[in-house]
Length: 121
Image (cartoon, rainbow, N blue to C red; front, side):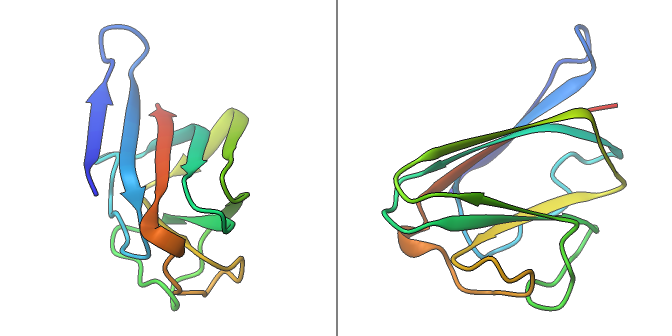
């Protein structure tokens, strides 16, 4: 599991946030500032579907805090979601689970979901 955030302040004031293996452990406040979520890419290396839970909370609790967005990715597939105009957030956090229920806490099979988020102001 490796999380990185890259800024493009000189170009468009966007950040690319990439997690190589998203699990049911929440990555908190990944953008480090408020902004808008413009796109999500998920690459699922497992044969089972997985679900990205996106929170607008600095310290959400998986299974207790309701995500504002739940996105699926099929097993052994890549999912891409473009959000025209972006979704506003104050503190962006996320985790992946095996089931679509917003309060599910089950780790995705093999913990092999790579997640890339593009955020901006």
